Length: 132
Image 1 (cartoon, one colour):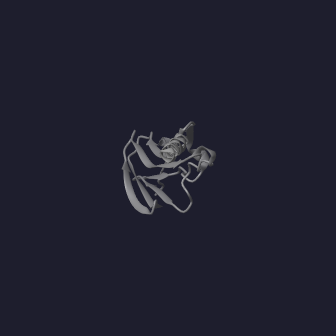
Image 2 (cartoon, helix red, strand yellow):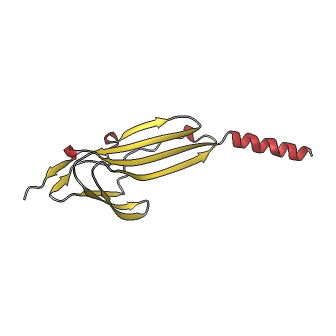
Image 3 (tube, one colour):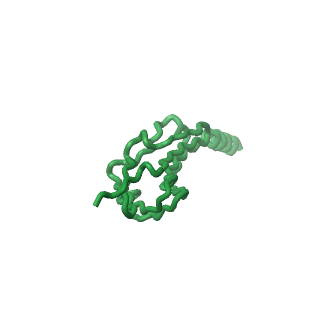
């Protein structure tokens, strides 16, 4: 009987310390242009995402579980250099930089269920007319 009580107390103690940390990366198209986002090696996948004006696209979301994930450093919001991100827009060149951490807006909600929000907002200034 003592074993069951101790076992139950240990399980309750361990579950009471459990926390989560979620990180989400999104792109908001705040421009007047529709375009294609081509990704290579993004989570071991290559893809083409069609993005319209005012569309919000979730690139990734993951969650760490554990007793102290908040004590671990948050990962950068920027896209890693090994991942290729290209924007294709007819008649325009995209000048935005997904690889620069300072181009991303980051919000952090602390607590037992912390959440790191990363957002890259694309606007008309990110496009330049192609010179032929």
